[in-house]
Amino acid sequence: MTTFFKYFTLLSFSICLTIASHAQSSKNENYIVLLDLSDRLLTVDQTNRDKRLIQDVFARFEGIVRQKFIINSRDCFKVVIAPQQGGIITENYENELFISMAAFNIQQKRKQLETFKANLPRILDRLYADATKGRKISRDFKGTDIWKYFNDFLVNDVINTHQNKPFVLTDGYFDFESNRFAGQLGNRTTDSRLMNKLRNDSDWEKKLRSANEGLIPVKKNFGKLSVCLLEIKPKFQNLNEQDLLVAVWQKWLFEMKINHFVFSPHGSLPATQKKIDTF
Image (tube, rainbow, N blue to C red):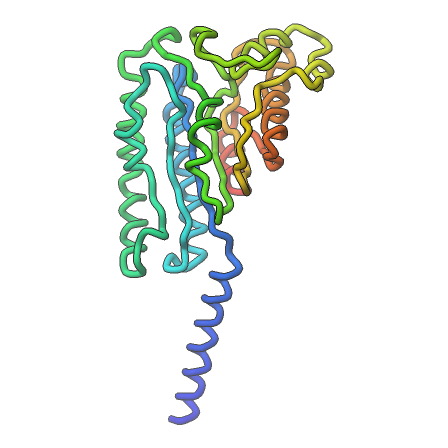
């Protein structure tokens, strides 16, 4: 009996050490899913793809939480919507599409995680139905201001103590109905005029490398930030359109000192899901 008691005590102590060690060695992570609800949603099956990918990002988040035995997790997950003139009322959804494991005590964490997971598909169905209601053609949609989100809102969504991971669901363009909504600094702007200028220029790569070309960089410190760009989809048939989109994003992020950046074009859903799993 004494031997068994000693063995049981040592085993319990070993398990406690393993849990504590895992909690200390695991980084806290903050998953941010940024939605572009522009006319890209007119692409066949795009709303279903978006909903599937958001749930895949959440599955990745849930896996991280469960690796920490749930009770040790202080990780966060949220879905945010890029600013859009005349778009849906973001507060109707963003409050429901946010979970911080640090906000719950040990007894609450598992139930809150499972409740959020169960409700997520229903909320996303409602969000995308709202975003596409009465909108059948491109001019029914207003452009989304991804630059404005990075400039005005991202700094409030990042958590300094966490590894921050924005997943941006977008076709890659910074489009507006009128340039009066966009900023300009010399040749640099906050919209897609740069791409329109370089698109048919055979020397576009060299010109984009020049110091006075590109999107206006946001001058804020985002800390530990990695960006995953999903569903890039060229609107034009130019041979190098996708390369141009990626190059503009790369320069913009690099100038903001965001050096970890991956992208996945609109195409094979399993390939995109794999990018999420390994990001």
